[in-house]
Image (cartoon, rainbow, N blue to C red; front, side, top):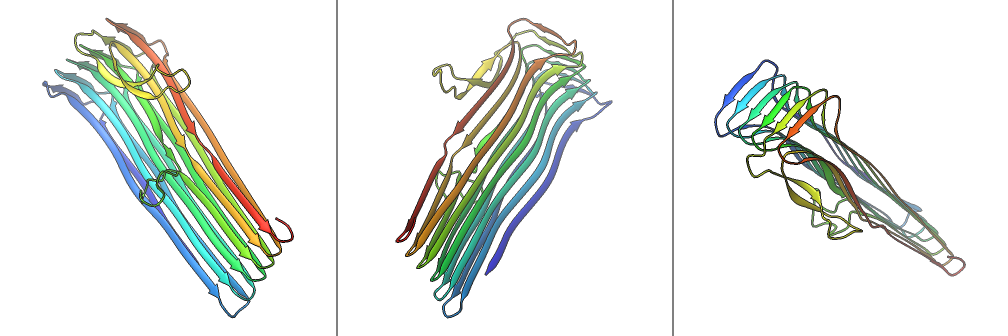
Length: 364
């Protein structure tokens, strides 16, 4: 028996005030907003039984792939507003790849394999490029990505002479998040905020079916039983790459006169010196903030039992790379009647649980 459950999504969303545009706006302000919200499930279930024959084989695959770009741009335009001028780009993904299989061979060999794969790739950009912005309150350029990705591969196999069960879970996340003021002029009666944020749960037991796995991010399991030789193998791989950038550069002239209540942004709690959680912080003046947050909680269980020899093996791998940059650069000029803040933050919560059991009357 064999089955493939697959979902693939590709999207591009762009909101732009384009070159040459001139806007004169009242107290309602200007909002340039682009967003992508995606929810996808790839589910594969396979079973095979050989009651009188010699071999039973089952293979199951649950695959979900997502790639999207989201842009909110003010490009070479002139905007005067009595209220705020805001460019916001947000990307929210919830992906789940599940694969389950069972094999029974009462007279010979049972072989089963399960593959769960979830792969998310995203680019999220909010930018003011060579624009002239004059706001009666705040200027805010925000880009945010939040991704929950779940994979689960669970297999079971029984063969009277030989049994092999193998399960592989792959969770892959790659995202780029940029919030930029590049060249031009940005003047605010209150505050100027440039904020880029990335986060999410890797493996994530949410995604397409929150009730399936409870609080586990990645579940990989194999059970192999035989009266002679049983092999159980589990491989769980999580790879996370995030590039987060917030910047004022390319000779931009930025002015914040601090005549209001500031703008809410992301910060890090100072209450705990070991783990500094995200919190909301009010920023005044000019603030450039870049922040990344990742949570990973994989679980791998492998068991093999045989009257002769039982062999159990597992390989849990977690690879994470975050690059977080906040900067004012490129001959830019900043004039703030209050604070000027350039802040880069990163937090990773990693919890790996692995269990392996092998038993046999001859060897385990």
